Length: 230
Image 1 (cartoon, one colour):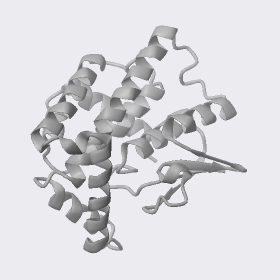
Image 2: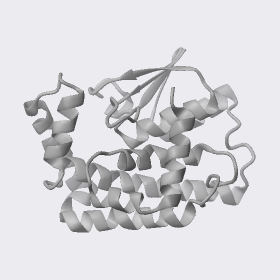
Image 3: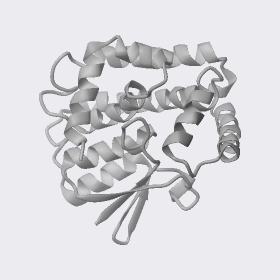
């Protein structure tokens, strides 16, 4: 059976990282059976990052590569009826979610207004973690942010970048149904991966304030959340 390796849950979502939750939601929506293993150490993962899957002799990393592999191997029909224009829209949203990821991560590990609440929540839910270990992770992420670019923003400027991404999503998500119609596709799983990690996040960041204030985003998030729950 396919095994998904991703970060552990937090605040009631199956993975506290948007990419892992995206893959989890896709597998649920696709009806592909899988085991879910939660880990913190990504050193053995392809490219040293989570999520990744192991399926027989195949090991696949990177969320988009995983979706492509599973779609081909298991003949997943979620995106089969999409038009070229819809596929282009999905690609653009996917790239924008990559940008939103960095702001979300910054709000947890670097923004001192929310760091302590995030650290304490992780330690409550995962008692094996230590303050020393999380401090090292915080330092590691600070280096990542600097070289990626978001680390050179001050906190308010970083949040403004994320709010611009969320504004684009608010304009794309319809009041009813899903992005491309009445049935969810892979891009809905991708959006859920990130929005659920904002909406269910029990810390009142500007990102969460924006999501909560937009009924269409909340409705979409809750609809996928109910569809993918065990």
